Image (cartoon, rainbow, N blue to C red):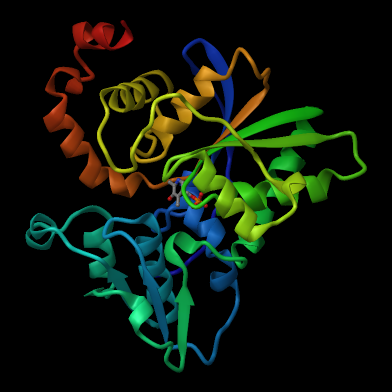
Length: 312
Ligand SMILES: *Cc1c(COP(=O)(O)O)cnc(C)c1O
């Protein structure tokens, strides 16, 4: 396996709900690397670490970061040890999605708290979800691609939207865009919404990486609370609509909340908007069957009647 990234990722125009958006296809960076994590782990892909033999990380048993780290470890010839707090019996018996793919790449999974264990020699520890400063390198490249494109298109003021988990990507993106546009007549403003935790949690994450709030992205949110990994009828609906109207498959964990939030703020915040598709589609393999089972009435997207119902 070789890691050759498709940089710069393409930018397309899509029409959704009658509005025009630009779409940054980071999902197309690499088929074996969740787009967002290709940016965040780019530093590790690029550099040699002769003293490292093993990656150690932790997080959820279906995370995109886990899968991408399993690919990184494989490419580098390292071991990969991953700590989770539990593995559902169902998943153990019928591995699927990111979990299945990561196991295939040789991940050793441990049901244990990694905090109880000291860092060994030759181990590279990576924080849950890739929340670390090294992410600045790859996310900086994303900023360069966006600002260069913006200039080429003659767009003086661009609004960029991407949904957040740890907020690492949004924060470093805003920082790098500010650095790149300083003293120029270009403005690139980053907007995001929390998908894990609430706005206060996300703000805290930003502050841990950068104390000066002048460098922070803008946080937009909805009144209703959405819990990460839980199924909501309107999330499935907007995901199906996106697929139907744009032909693009989005992720089911972050993008539904992302698009719902963006649509809710369009009247207030004038575009042009660029939405960053951060990949994660492999995770749909486990999420989609759950949605299909739960909302059977919405499931067959080829059925005209059902599609009309969706649009009600
Ligand atoms: C990891 C991930 C995110 C969240 O990125 P953060 O930097 O943690 O905010 C969003 N979307 C997808 C598809 C991801 O894999």
